[in-house]
Length: 565
Image (cartoon, rainbow, N blue to C red):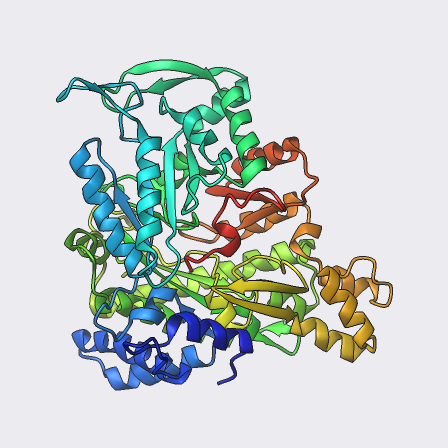
């Protein structure tokens, strides 16, 4: 097993088993063995050979071709046993519900999961509280309480607490929500997104007004000009990176189980829409491992996707759930989210610049292959193990539709730390830099992209002086010793126009059941009009949500150090 120095640092800091004194008591190989054994035990439920599948899962992970989400690596085979990364909890309009949900979120955060909440059901500020005759404090005040609680919970948790807070664009308190993170230090444990409706986008297009609805009474409480609200969203996103947008009507049109409930929220990085009390297990194929002699090795990739789908389906049975309601929902829909990482590496190995038309075309081809193969594997599991329990009444319960084991099979996650373990580029992002220093927990890590070093040696421009220049500036612009085609191939996130970032997200979304985590990067000098254009383009092109980050703006987003793999 070849693990990079950075991978070993991350594993020691966060994943390997420790004793009561905090000393590491497990090797990386033993960690993969623990996880493989823990997941493969589920095979016994279906009268399969658990020992045989343990070996298959161990080989798949230890070769770094596939890794599951962080909670699985941390908790499988341990008493805690909570394996899912993504959760959504409902917040109803009562003090009991608000604080019951906070307690439940604490259990999830403690186990390494990330939680999404929609606060849209809460009555607005200044509304009357019938039982006391008092005045309601509104959703934003309760989001702040959740944020403070997360600060305390994460001290004893497995990793940084991550939350998503969502408010519908037609909630009367929407402007307060949009502006909240402009205050330095507010909601540091939350990404926030506005849940945008088609009606709002239509009003924006017409430069018209739209209605604000009091969720307590269902009555129209006022009207706002869509353009003014949109401008406030853009201003906040330009300043802080938040709020993002989720296109809630589009997300619900793709809901595979509308008879069970409607989507209100996503997980912290936005790629996983979930029903209230639903969870999802994620995993990612490392695409950098599937390039052979200048081409994508689809045969090997397909064989491994089938193993990964089985691994994720087994994880649903192997997981120990923090709440009975979550267990019921997860086992009812059996959602899994298989995605990819190492995409930028695959393109470099194939000699295709990230924002070349060939890259967008390959993205569609690769993700279509991932989805079709994953769905076929789910059909195969359904033949042996049965369809997911909520199948009757689902979109699959129709003539000509596949009989699947899992209500969804594909998601593109940011793969924050698991891509460090796999020593590959994260998710579908371009390289953020060719060389950089980054902090993981309290450790500083220095990196120069290994493919760039190989290229420099092969092409004959490697020298200590060139490497020093690359380390100093992090990108290749203006380094004349480096050939132009190499500079193009190793273009970094801030050298790629926002429109091309969106095109890549669009390409992957086309063949993804759930959603796609992708940061739309802007240089520091970007104007607000460019952010506005990106938001409109994302809606028109059909993605399910959008996150922007202007380099050097206040640290207003968790996406930059995305930890909800």
